[in-house]
Image (cartoon, rainbow, N blue to C red):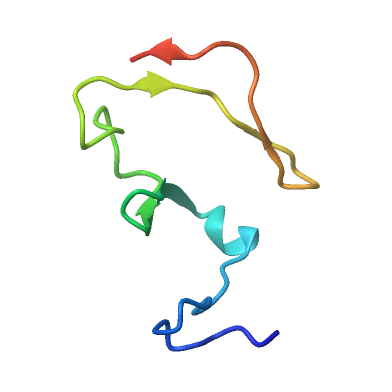
Length: 77
């Protein structure tokens, strides 16, 4: 299947691999049909810009498989 349509037909416009995405913080917003990429050092103490309250969930990325997993409980920030 070719990748790279003009986006008007609902098909993928392109593909980003984990080798590229690991350099950024990725925000997935399915409600708005958006993906945002942020530089990893921009946040400071305002990691969540759209709300004063949020939860924290630690993620671990495997060096070999690049799978993201989490352990433990969600904590309030």
